[in-house]
Length: 256
Ligand SMILES: Nc1nc2c(c(=O)[nH]1)N[C@H]1C(S)=C(S)[C@@H](COP(=O)(O)O)O[C@H]1N2
Ligand SMILES: [Mo]
Image (cartoon, rainbow, N blue to C red; front, side, top):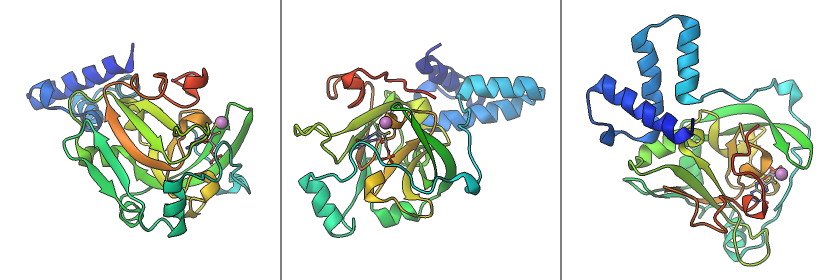
């Protein structure tokens, strides 16, 4: 079953509970309403859990104790972007940074770094797995993407989220980008991370903000995020396969 079908089913369930038309529903609050559906049902625990997993896909990636945090979070890919817009922003300590949320939303939004830091924050100690064959554990804090998408209010046509980055890793004037579906965008461990191990995210690891999408491989963790665009499909970006590395042949799903 595809995730789009999962989302369609969530919408139907919520509509059934609320007695409203499915057309009014949006992505992330449909997820929380599926929890409500389970609560309302009051079914036996194992079935309850199974329904919740099937409905929401909210299986959590493993989280680790502080004692397992790696001494250095090994940086990879772009580690010191040289694009003019990034250098200008870095030059003033990211005071002029604005994270933009645009596309298939009712309310396009932008946030300064201070605004993001003042928002609800999730902290998670997780393992990053790069396809090159190494892993590293770090403690990330940031704003759940679901929270930001609910503020922006998804339009009914929203299906995926594309992340546009500041760095030109290909060296051809293009920019790193990535994309995920709405189920991953609304996953509780999908955060717009502004700190690593209790300090601001270092430049090498994606300052001022980078995504953590914990059920995905390393290349699906975009660093140096400039703009988050809600779309119906990633087909019109880059070479159409959903990300910089996907355009080079990597798998779009990239799940762990
Ligand atoms: N913007 C951007 N994001 C990126 C990359 C990159 O080159 N540019 N590299 C990816 C890859 S392959 C990995 S393994 C991780 C590395 O994250 P880290 O530098 O914090 O270890 O970032 C991912 N996100
Ligand atoms: Mo990677």
